Image 1 (tube, rainbow, N blue to C red):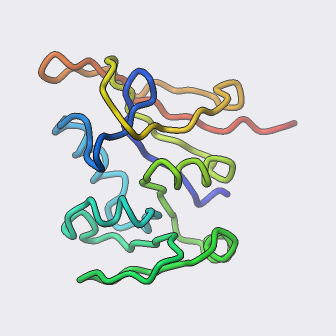
Image 2: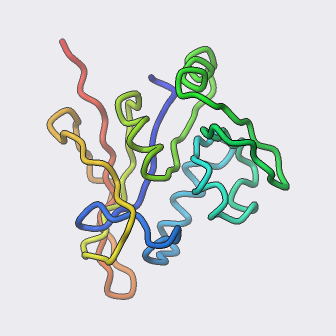
Length: 164
């Protein structure tokens, strides 16, 4: 889907988090996340929604994929099935950015055309991982190489290859 992208920061072994928390704090990457999602629709799972402060959804419209009723203090659009949410996204011209968590990434990778992955060059203790994907199906553009507090990381843009 042309209007559906994904953004994540992952460790060397695709680590995403531990106990529903991020594994690192990289201010520059948080700025990148903010710039990439500001003013956009964000697709998020229930656990990730509740792990983030409500301020994280400021000037973003949250779309939550969850079969459960949600009790939150800010506006969210809740969908109880993947088909309903994909249909909504497909009939909408606005941009949507998938922001996690792991199961949401797994479900949406087949549908996104672009992935922005910050890849931290280190192994971490984690209980949540970014799903495996076939890198051969994607063109990779290095957007930058960075370092913060002895953490080296590379930001890559993956664009799905088109079948000719």
